[in-house]
Length: 234
Image 1 (cartoon, one colour):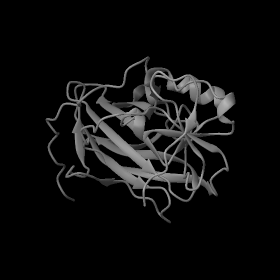
Image 2 (cartoon, one colour):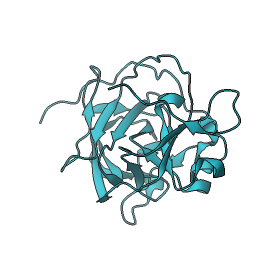
Image 3 (cartoon, rainbow, N blue to C red):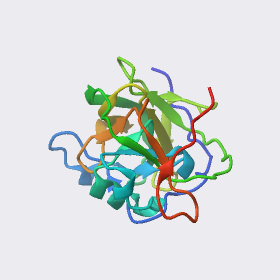
C-alpha cells in the first residue's frame, strides 16, 4: 500500500469564531472517548457573507436581519433555513495522544435527495470585496456518487495528525439541482487500530439545496429591510 504523505506544515488562515463546535458523531454505538483522533465540526462556516445564501420558507417582510457568522446556527434553526447552492463545513482534526494518526480518506454519504423547496433565497451580506481563495476540498452533491476532491492545488489524502500537529479541512459541498441530506466519513488508523468516524451536524445530516430559479433577496449595509437582489447578467 502507498506510504502516507507527510503532514502538511500549513497553518489555517483563520479559525471559525464563536463557541465550541459540534463533535463528530461516531457510527453506531462506538465509544468515541477512547479514540486516538477527535474532530471539531463547524457546519455553518462561510467563505464570506456575500457567497452564503439560505433558503427560507418566509416572505421578505417576515424575515429578521441576517446574523453574524458566529451566531448563524441559532438564526438557521429558528427559521428552518437550508444552506443554498453551497455549504462550507470546516473540520479541525487532532490526535488525542502521543501517537500519530493517519487520515486515509474523507467520503460523502447521501441520506436523501429530492427537488429543492420552492422557498426564497436570502444572502448574508452585500458589498463584499474579493476574498482570498482558500485551499479546500469540494464535492458535487448532484452527482450520482458524490466524491470529495482537492481543489486549487490542494493535495489529496492521506494526511497525518497528532495532538501537537492538527489539520483543518474545509469542505465545500455544492448542490445545483437537488435538495440533499448528507454526512461524511473519515477513515483513520493509528498503529494497529483503525476505524471510520462519522461526521455530521450534531447527530443530524447536513442539509444543502439548490436554489436555481428561486427569488433572491439582499439586506443592504445600513438598510432596514430585505430587497430583491440585482439580476445577474447573462
